[in-house]
Length: 139
Ligand SMILES: [Zn+2]
Image (tube, rainbow, N blue to C red; front, side):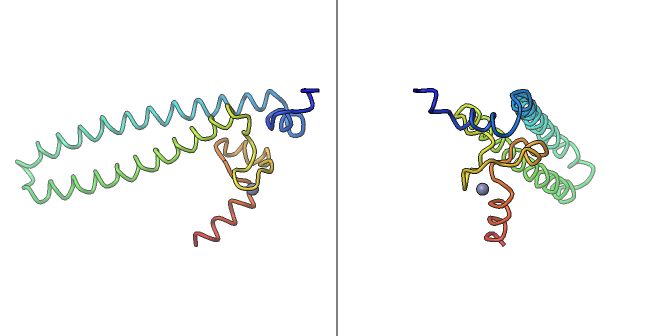
């Protein structure tokens, strides 16, 4: 009788796509996570180098110019770092949904997200309807 209670994932797989495609999306997410982590590491190294360069340049450029250049650089890398962290959180969330057996289902309405959307954006956690509804609210 327990076979009746299928997990969301099992239902999802039987209704929407092959196991192969499902595994592929998980692999892509894991690779994406690796890539983001590497980028964040690189960013930290770059930031340290920028700071050192700014200290070095002060002698030639004068304090103001060097500080201004440094401020622009660190502003850019902060923005990049925060968008990378955002993306990492979304990828982690998608991977957690794999563990929970709810991958591919919309966080808001619980309906399946279209395979085309997940192929384009494996970390998508909202179906296209909920996504556009939220964007309207935020506007
Ligand atoms: Zn939805």
